[in-house]
Image (cartoon, rainbow, N blue to C red; front, side, top):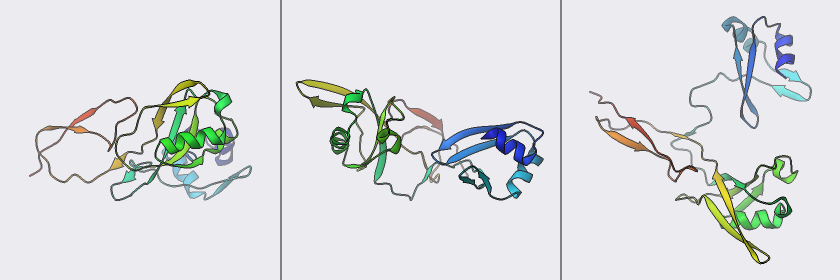
Length: 184
């Protein structure tokens, strides 16, 4: 797709593409003038796809503090392909807070590294593993919760270190610290 776009805009510099989310791509132009010209060209059609421009903002992809989300995607690693069926995925979803839906790539068996399901999110800690019984075996599955970062306004500042965390544990269980500045 990058070559088609570069050609249609008559770019002399290079064009980089990076996938952001399901329907979003970050375009990186070598020359600023070409980026401005391309963004002013309006909507583009590439095959059956319509492309529009949004100016990139540093917090794109993040939730704003006031946004409430009661659903979340979870990836299931280690699920044998023989168990990739709606009944088993629904059962896993119920154990994860409440099943909602199955990702289209999972339904079509297009991405076999993991199965991806949408579940209800009630807040609190999310398990990183889940044990399910199958016939006379117990299978331990690794879960990866797709948390969206949340952007909040800084309320009170001081010279101290604080822990920066989401409302629940990350998949790796790691922590990040940042130094808060004193504002006068």
